[in-house]
Image 1 (cartoon, helix red, strand yellow):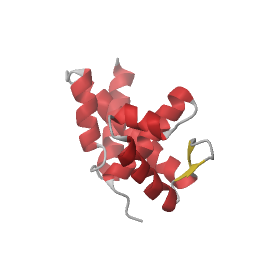
Image 2 (image 1 turned 90 degrees about the horizontal axis):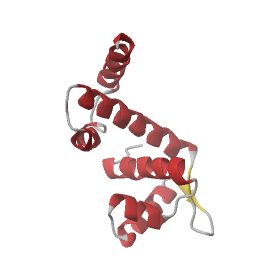
Image 3 (image 1 turned 180 degrees about the vertical axis):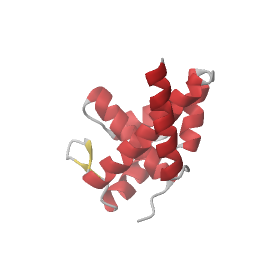
Image 4 (image 1 turned 180 degrees about the horizontal axis):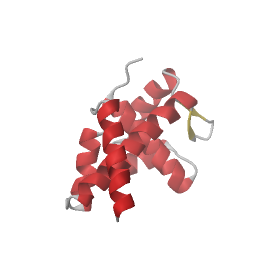
Amino acid sequence: MQIYESAEDYLETILVIQQRKGNVHSVDIAQDRNFSKASVSVAMKKLRENGYITMDKDGSINLLEPGREIAERIYERHQVLTKLFTSIGVDPETAAEDACKVEHDLSPETFEKLKAYTASMHKDN
């Protein structure tokens, strides 16, 4: 199933907020991403309809297994790329922003090579 970059970003955001706070609500996503509550509501409806999340009666958002897999993959890419960019001297904020731009488009092969490279860099230090 084709998943769009924006959906990947939402899933990653849900994962990060969940790790930080435990519970995730649409308002948390809106604040974190600086999006309108209406846009987040539309996105959550699509993610729910496509089987990536569930929403409890109290509005708590939970990742289903397909959504969690995508979120974890994108978050890992974000972390590795940010670490790589900062290691070559890029400002941490810029590195994180650039990682967001790149994380969706790398092939699995390139990402695995970058991941191995960054892991070997940190073994040498």
